[in-house]
Length: 104
Image (cartoon, rainbow, N blue to C red; front, side, top):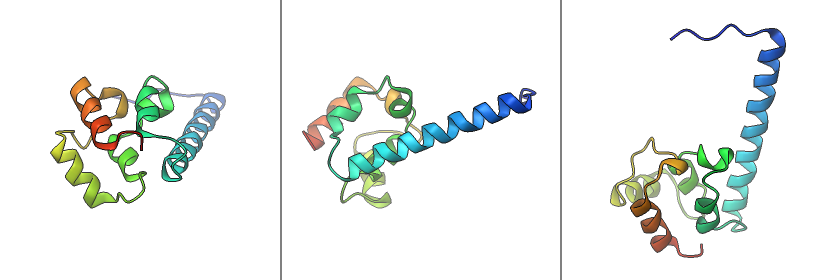
C-alpha cells in the first residue's frame, strides 16, 4: 500500500499531531508511574485515542515495579497478545487486570 501524497502543510500538521499525542502519552505514563492514575482509571478511558492506542505492554511497564520481564510474564499469564492495545482488550482480560491490580 503506497503512502498518500501529502502537501507540505498536511505533512507539518500530521507531524504536530503526532508530537502532541506522544507528549500526552508520555504524561499519562508519568502519571501511572507516580501512582496518580490507577489501572481502573486507564481502562475506563479506553475510548480516548491517546489511551486506547497505547500498547498494553507499554502501559504495564509504566506501573511501579514492572519492567519488560515482569510485563511479558504477566501478559502470558493473562493471555494478552504482545501487540494488543488497551482499546482492544476483551472483557475477560480487563477483569483479570482489574482483579490483579485492584485500585493500583
